[in-house]
Length: 335
Image 1 (cartoon, helix red, strand yellow):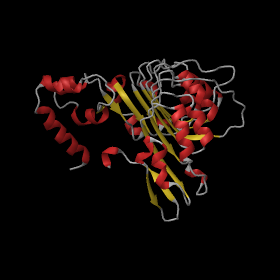
Image 2 (cartoon, rainbow, N blue to C red; image 1 turned 30 degrees about the horizontal axis):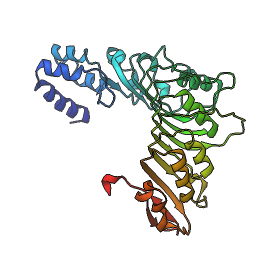
Image 3 (cartoon, rainbow, N blue to C red; image 1 turned 45 degrees about the vertical axis):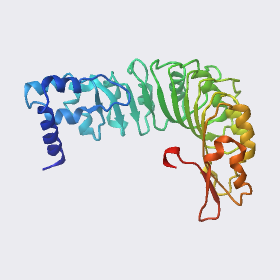
Image 4 (cartoon, one colour; image 1 turned 60 degrees about the horizontal axis):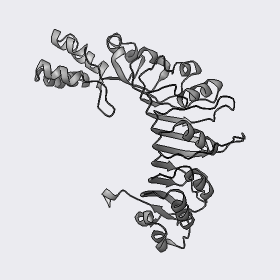
């Protein structure tokens, strides 16, 4: 028995074991972040035309996800039946999916490169309910600048969380305005001056994950900003000057995670925990939780590091095979 028939058999028994009301209530619940949605194509392929009652239930489901894995999936006739009820769309191959068919999407994820034409279609008029957006690599271009302008100038008024690859700075003649709905950003890389533009635009941002500080040859004038809502910050740098600049804008931060930039190789400078402690006391007095992952050769103050700051008491060390000492933390629940 193939996988689809097994899935159909198990799911059918589950459905038929419930009353019509129970099934209807279960499958027609509206979209809620974090709640598992139902794979529309699998449901229709498995159950459609079993009987009228199930057909009616399928046609009422409002919490449908869709992840086309082939052109056959994308062009399946069943897709027309549920396209306007898809709330979660996950796309690994954008070349055979027209995302604009799914106008009720709340969660939109792209895991591959989008053409310039496809990027122009990611706008509010097609996705008016967008809450979560994940984008793969976006080529630096005028169209990309327009897209970022939409993200950070309230082009998607309901957008709560956004995941981006590299982020380019705004054009000097078209500065970002405000996107008050954004609470969480995960961005692979952007230049240090762009940080202040992000904070200015996302006044209610509470979580920022910043994987790489990019170098830039462009003279970008940073905007002075004091951002009071950011609570959680992940940064991949151990450059003390950069850390101080970053933390000086977010006085109410309570969770900080610092990681070495491994791309710099084995000879990256060590993290100065003593100097870092002074910066934390001065810039982020509300800090309650500190995590780190870094390396150092021949450290001299391992035993005194926990004394520099209360949040350093969770720091642990181990000797790695190449002779360096690893500094790291683990969650309290696993200690």
